[in-house]
Length: 337
Ligand code: ACO
Image (cartoon, rainbow, N blue to C red; front, side, top):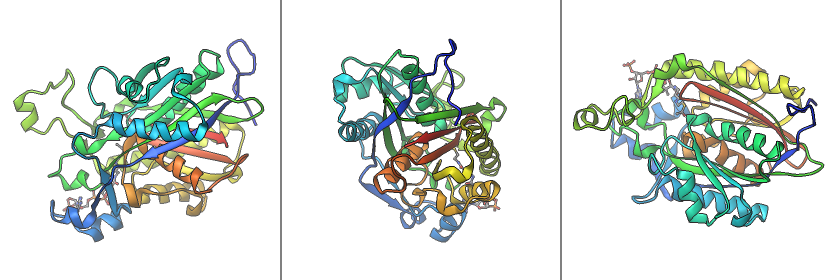
């Protein structure tokens, strides 16, 4: 197995995921509920996406609240106290506020007073981008303990009158605590890629300085998620295949070495297409999108927590996470558990 080296050629410090946690809101929105809201059917949604239900945050339940609950579960599992956390990274496209960062809100909620905090924007790929940032900080000895969170409340930016998009998304948060751990392999490598030429296939055009939240822009629904579904589907399969191949090449492992693949949970057909292209049985993939839909940056983080807690893989096993999202962004991490 190839391990990356720091610029000074010293072997970098091994970084492990020492705890995971996740949280989804209580309220369940089923396909039957959506049939009453837009012109759709349970049959259409299940056959085109695999999604049966998703969770929707309660009024007053923000991204930071979900993130903090996921973080606390990761801290409990890892037996790490709030005071030991050096850095909080929150990957999200639905921050509580533009500023301060959601990471600062999480810091306040969990009492991690010694941490530096910032948010990272890479849409659905954000959790793995944040894992790579954390890995760099720890392996280069800047920080010892980093809390990485993927959290999104997409229900607040979905256009609930657009059947093309509103059936796909849900709310939730997932967290991982990363630390240097002697003698372990931990996060072996992460490959990250982006292609800004595809920025318009999946985006929220309003709310930033390009189209501020004026009454006109608001009425045009610019503050909601817009998506070209077919093009996104195509790019998702291509980019996840690229990311998987690159991460495996970087790690020196083959796909047969993996015990479990944890993909972005957008659409079962995308995962099936990836399985076919990579020539791996679908059973190797951990899938939970039937219950949660696409929770954006939270999706792979929730799936990781669920897969580890339900014994999908064990200590020493190799796993691969792979994601894509708006930007276009994509990434894949290989981890020895
Ligand atoms: N119910 C019923 N009919 C629908 C619905 C719905 N909810 N949504 C769309 N349709 C209709 C369309 O209007 C279209 O009708 P038309 O032919 O009369 O125009 C028809 O169904 C077929 O539409 P297609 O776009 O061909 O359907 P497709 O098989 O491509 O499935 C889907 C659509 C599910 C959106 C698919 O393209 C997809 O999953 N794309 C990727 C989406 C994705 O992954 N997004 C998130 C990416 S990153 C992130 O997580 C933020």
